Length: 440
Ligand code: DC
Image (spheres, rainbow, N blue to C red):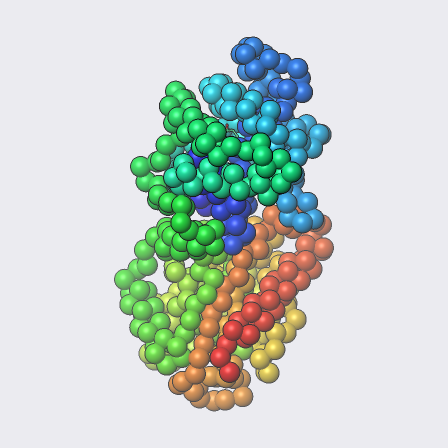
């Protein structure tokens, strides 16, 4: 899933894109840093920017990589050299804007950008992200702010960073530079800065960073709902009635839907009650599958309803292998499957140790794990009660997905252990977060 953020400088683009990526647990790519790194490479190779042939041939040899340090800050590398700080100098800024006009250079960098976006959920920030690089992006944002406001922000930034040089800053000169740069960016022949026709325009002049990030997260949630395939009408009908039931009787709240992404995945939930599979199913924005004991399918109305809700019977004496094959098939078809990695319902509501099924399936299917914590189901229908209560409060909280690539390079045994550790940690974090917010 790709979100693009374009706009002129001084609109808060980088900060907003970084904060948004943090909120959604997406990867953040600052494409300006790529143009700057290439400019550094040109300068470092002592090539004149006017020598087009040499600059173009350098773009073919440009080896660029990004690493994340322990503080989760990005570090940029050209070959083996770290250039993170050096690319922020004034001379690199102006060189970057010069070389960004060369079509062949743009082609090389666009190729790198598309490759980076290929396998990840990412926020790309730049000038032509929504128009040229990712015209199929799931959500496109175009930020603006009046030149006066942007000049004021730049002026204040300079004053804060260099208080001893305050006398040398001239507001009208800064404003004039901004107007000139806007003109250059919007009128250049190749990939000029412009709003994609399907981008959402946000004027950041009088909004705080938090307000803008919140606005984009809400837009993202809405898009997420739209990108999922439509539910079958029978599924939708039972889903809507069951959802209404949980809303009315248990004031069900769903949190973290922004983490939901299309495609295969295991929804790994805590298990305290027979209500859990239904609560998780009706909290998801798309059709999901779950397993249920064969005996439940023999109960007259319930059996029919859970079948419509994509539940699959597993017999008590049925082999694990048959169940695994069934889940793998569903995952390979791109479906999402609800699993309870603890194996059975907890007697006291605590999260128990996880069994080996989840890591085995993740390794085989190479799919994401969506941790989810259901709160309130234990009070409503614990294992010790034959019949459920029909009132209470429930919350279903989804957490950031755990990607299988995290474990890709580990040996099988280590990966099995780490997958369970990460999932249990995520369930505990969701439990703390959800229970702390819960009214007592
Ligand atoms: O956003 P920034 O100031 O770090 O960008 C550095 C230069 O790169 C700037 O002159 C515009 C150019 N650029 C571009 O042409 N296309 C992009 N996608 C990103 C930046």
